Length: 141
Image (cartoon, rainbow, N blue to C red; front, side, top):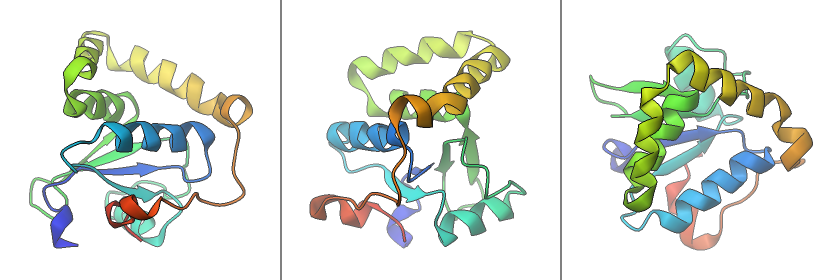
C-alpha cells in the first residue's frame, strides 16, 4: 500500500456505468501511472470514509483521496474531485480548471443532478467490473 502514498486514489461506485466509464477514461489517459482506484463498495473505501465521518453507503459521490496516509490527507468530493482529476490529467483537460470559477454550490447541484440519474441514463452492473490485467495493480482491494 505504500506505493499509493503520493498517488491520488479515486473512490467510485463500482456498479455505475458512468463511474466505470470515468475510470476507463482516466486509465486511458493516465500515461504517468499516477492514479489509483477503489470502489466505494469495498471494505477499504468503507473504512476510509468512516475515518472521515462520511457515510460509506452513499454511492452518489465520487471522491479523490489526496496524500493518502500522510498528515495532509484530504478527501475531495463531487465537482471538486472531478475538476482535480481533469486538471491532473493535464493537456487539454487542464482547461476544466475554469470550472473552479463557478460557485461550488452550483457545480455540486449539477453534479447531484447527474448522480441522481446516472443509473437510468448510463446503466448499472450487477457487480463491480474487474480491471483488465495490465491495470490490476492500480486497484486497491
